[in-house]
Length: 399
Image (cartoon, rainbow, N blue to C red; front, top):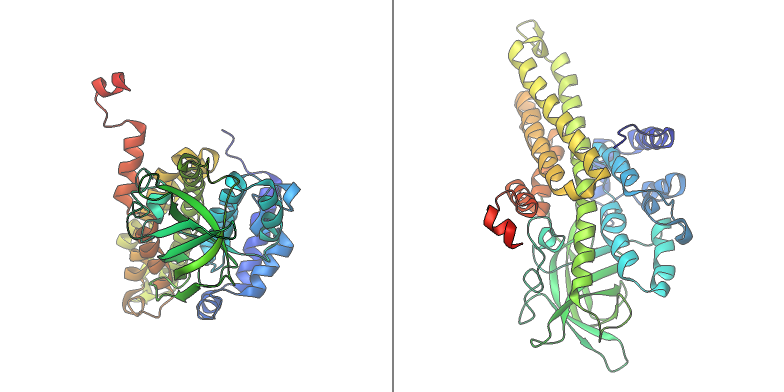
């Protein structure tokens, strides 16, 4: 493994940090998340034009930059530093890999270029609070278990009279689902006897589609409730008659591994920035005639945070090289962000406890991400289970 960054990667990091430093401060973040879109559309288009950010991991033949997922991880560390509200996670990290893996040649040609250009946004809709399970982060995404089982709940699909598909049901926690131009909906088909979970494409103007933005703890991660009432949809893939959900589940798990590395990098960027802002504050805040940062107890707390953030950063970079370690890296990064954000509030004193203080932006991100993609102990338990850490010698022989 070569941990050194290339000159191009360093330039991308520098340019992205410069743009976000000018356009994405805490006040701009608070303003952007309270718009109807939930993000700054002009900034999103600027990032698409100058850096090709939405298409970093999209192949060049589809209008993307053609970089590796490691470049996306590196970029998302910078977006995490700024807590950038954008469709990047939902579109480039979750939707694009699924379309690339499962879509037909015609679907890839029609969808990937506008997604890479930033003109089209997408969101992945899975039933209930099951996103982490669907992506195989906190448990195996076994058929039917996370998506309602095919009997009740979740989203159901049936063939339509026009040769297409019709969807019924709802998904309650869809990242960026309130204004995504395209929805990838996980739905059951085949009835109880041959229940399968497949992915379907639903356009924003489809009849019977109702979307409502939900109130969330972390406004930089907007979520929506998606309701489908006899909504026309297109199967993602070619042949439903011969389709099995193994390919869908494998694609979701592969997407989850890369998403975990990206989310880990975002959390590391946020934790690093929270720590930097806290260090700056304790250098200026005086008590008993001297900066509070000069007290040994404060130095020890900051040193512990620095070690934790650096360890999480190393884990995130390793996961960028080997996405199979994404779950462990995400667990370590989420834990580092939660502890760092909590200490930032403590070390800012009385002003840090006010809900409107900027330190709470990082605390809300830590709490919300752990609810969406964790919790940390389940991420670690699943990683340990998959590695065979708690498997007995007899079970290993049987396998």
